[in-house]
Length: 353
Ligand code: F1P
Image (cartoon, rainbow, N blue to C red):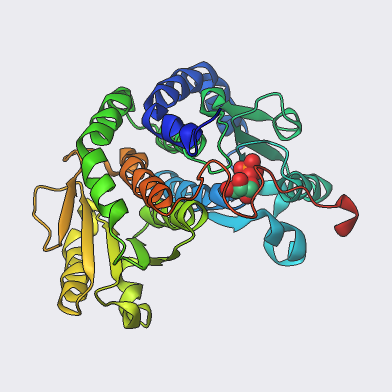
């Protein structure tokens, strides 16, 4: 008898093994990736996915543009289908990167076909299933096979694909990536150190709404955390750029709201100010903080300090996944099979041209 939530829990707390596997897998494709990049330096990069992997695409595009200075943008795969004339401005000089846990999502596969029809030249796939149709159609596969999971809700899969994306962006920018070898151990320490705190916060029934704030590459991770809280615990959740929260959403800041800030070293002053103001409005706040400066927040999770910013995105994830998991379990839900959801969305391919 499979216990409720058993898969999700196991996949969250063992995920750093998949991170380590991802680092090894990346090492095996690194030179081929660099050769393709040198052979066809794109004028622009489009990154795509659906649901969780769309949010992963957002973080990936931010990192790619920041580190390589090549214009990069994330679109949900559906946009690449429904707004083809708008988004495919220069397909022959575009690198398309499609991210998909399954490698079988209809919209993502169809988006690649449209790209090819428009003479798109390079398509790379980041996926947990290197034998999938999406992967087999790619010029380069970045495989995260150890991220495969039983739960419908992406956790280990998302994080291991994010490790590949972080390594890809830093490597294409000719950066020293040796510090990445520390990620699995740092992630495991975070899981151990924050578990009890996430149990306590997950039990809080006075929290009715959750808002995840991030800037730059952190917004995609904040959006994924929002989706986990939504999918797993059926709670009202939102994700916003940090300073955008003042421009309307802060109307929801009160004693029933938990606002979680994914603090970034370069923007910490402005970000911590937002959390402080929300505290004054009566909201509860939690800072995920990779700096030595204490945030004025109800709770704080200390992330490793002094790491290069491109290493950080995946480190925010484990506590936020645990929080969603424990809240779901407290509510008697089963995060392994969120209401209404399937592991993959298949559409009638006749729907699209
Ligand atoms: C995409 C996706 C997931 C979502 C749910 C349904 O799957 O939308 O992001 O959480 O599981 O499928 P994939 O293309 O990443 O396999």
